[in-house]
Amino acid sequence: MATAPLIPAAPEGRYAHAWRALRGRNFRLFFSGQSISLIGTWMTRVATSWLVYRLTGSALLLGTVSFAGQIPTFLIAPFAGVLVDRMDRRKVLIATQLAAMVQSLLLAGLTLTHRITIHEVVALSVLQGVVNSFDMPVRQSFMVQMVDDRKDLQNAIAINSSMVNVARLVGPSIAGIVISLSSEGWCFLVDGLSYIAVVASLLLMRISVPKVARATTGMLAQMREGWDYVSTFRPIRTILLMFAVVSLMGWPYMVLMPVFAGQVLHGGAHTLGFLMGAAGIGSLVSAFSLVLRRSIKGLLKMIPIAGATFGLGLVAFGFSHVMWLSMLLMVVVGWGMMQGLTASNTIIQTLVPEDRRGRVMSYYTMAFVGMAPFGSLLAGTLAHTLGAPRAVQLTGACCCIGAFWFLRQMPAVRKDMRPIYEQLGILTPLAADAVPGAEAAAK
Image (tube, rainbow, N blue to C red):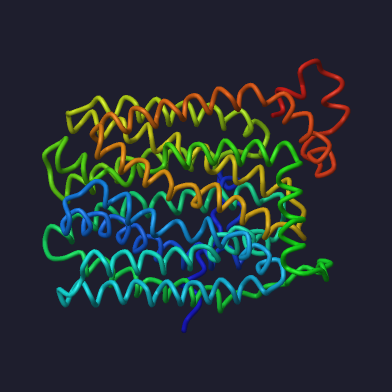
């Protein structure tokens, strides 16, 4: 296979700093392969929601299927984090991509042959959840190994977020068109085949595995060590708690999008695609703004701002019955969601030591995906009882409360972060002590 098309040249020019992580060959390979695969992933997410809604017409079952696909992450992620710290991360990542490919192709085959039922959707969603339990911690931990200069880590995470959101914009729109013209099965088939690009890019990488002293204790002891670190180190604990609140109360709005598209806005699959695409635009704008940042200074204060923006956008979306206004509010929601996600990821990745990275990122995965199944079930239940608009209004308000709580915690979080930032050269004691308020401004 020719490697040239998979490795675009690193950009140069006035905004070259915005793409500095792409100077590394490994990250360019990852960027190329993942860009293709993520479009298929977002097509599958939209197609699965629409398939469940078409088969059942139930908001409660939409939440149930999402719960089934995400609960394995809550249960398995801590064990996966220990394995990630013990094993070759690239090999684990290749294995998860191949498993995800099988899941998508099975879903495609059953749908295209008209044998799919809600039971198969639930079972395959559980399988995907098991795969994600390993995939997300190893993917996040592997990011450091793909970046040649750790100072470019924030830029790599932001570029990765941009890539996710280009796919988030393109994938749902394509899915809406494909579903309206034929069947959800073609979306699943495209997704399954797209994993070939990711596996190829991983095999082509030249990875230097860092020499880290690995623990010789058992798995349970390592799990406990990771938990003790996460629960006692205030910055990571506070960020993960805020992240868990948003994941529990806010993120499951996506489960209810078919209801809004069909019942509130009186549209079809194309309406669902437009709503998801609008959220993708907001997320993309957020990701690009983070790509343009030259350092991680100032990211901490973006977490409560993003949480409040996300929550207020959801509350307003719950009141809208007009398509253009709903799409505009989805842009706001998408911006807040991605800003908080990327800022939290970047700060955690910067603070965590290498020998605990896999375990810490497994708890990050639990906060991100592991809380979502309970949120999906809650959202489906609230929508079934109160209606989708009221459900989204209520959960959005909870996100705003969480943002206010995080704002109150920020002074103590800054104080604990500062020694690590000084050690990494992000802050200097002279700059912080010489100017009153410099510590707050730096964060």
